[in-house]
Amino acid sequence: MPSNAYTGHLVALLRDAEELDEAHAALRTGAPGRQYGPAALNRATVVMCVSAWEAYIEELVRESLAAVRPPGISDPIWNLLQAPTLRALQRFNTPNTDQVRQSLAESIGAPDISASWTWRSCTATRARERLREAMDYRHQVAHGVNPRPIIHNSYSSELPNFFRRLGRCTDNAVRTHLVNTLGIANPWPP
Image (cartoon, rainbow, N blue to C red):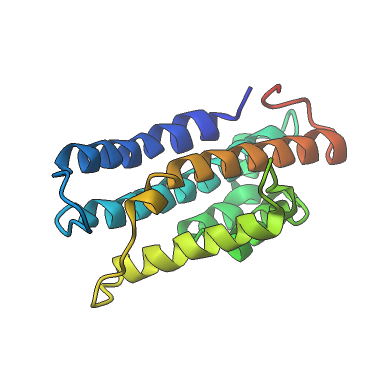
């Protein structure tokens, strides 16, 4: 079973990106060549996917902190102990490989989380490259690069699936770290 961060944030928020792709499909004219009107939907899809990824990582850190809370510790003490991590999350706005790695390392001591980003036909190196590419596009769109980046529908329509896979790998690696390294009861059973 995945984390609440995965189901309640990543998957739920990626639905917006999928709806943009559905709108793109509905606007197709059938004429050959690039259609410039729906191109904005492709750019918006990238922004929505990265936004969902960011929300997922933030919530995964919060959920992981809750899992490592020692029993019997009072709320005021716990709030004090987790305050630095929660402050760092407020500044977390670039969910690239390095920032995700750093956030999970500093909050729960997880090793290089990106090493777990592998699945059939995708190595960890390739997953990092794909995340970097999505982040580059997101920065270009969000910061008003002109001319606007050309993002093909074949790319944007695959992004939600990429981020779901990235989330599954991240969930599994964090669960493994919590259980096997920190000795925490399984916070979200497989």
